[in-house]
Length: 210
Image (cartoon, helix red, strand yellow):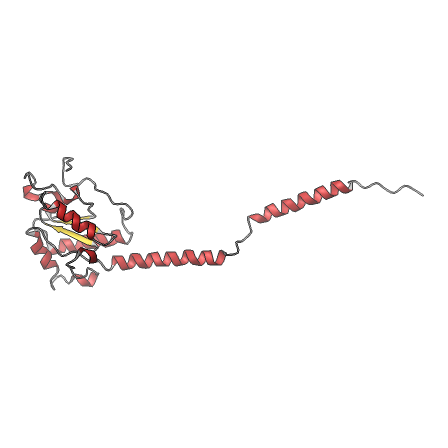
């Protein structure tokens, strides 16, 4: 009786090859493996994205200015709050008498060095996120009194300013346009919505800091 043909592989080699093939198959399937909570993870991301957009939308369309004025620009600020401008149609709500219910500070008028601590205190008491609008030449660069010993050369010397509204006196329409720019910044449609700092005023030539 003829001898049986020998197998090309031994039993041990066959087991090793089978184990290697199984390992290769498992490795190739790892990148296609789905997590058990993948649906909940995606739902959570979608919820966060929707909530973020809703929060930005609500902040953009409900700006609460602080009711205070420093000098003659405050007269124009009163005109802005009157019925002729009708600022509430764009989401610029009533001026509030307490800083804890406000998120926008409109600095209207020149700022003396003796007033700086008071303005800082009001700013620190405002609700976060909070924004600052420099309204008029005095709040922007010191105005006609920029060489005075007791007038600071712009409120951006002590507070981070988001929008500048120039003019002497500035018209209420200038403030209306400045708040529209602020809405774009709050909504993330313009640059500077992520980080705010005390930057150099483009209307002031020299680099002066208190």
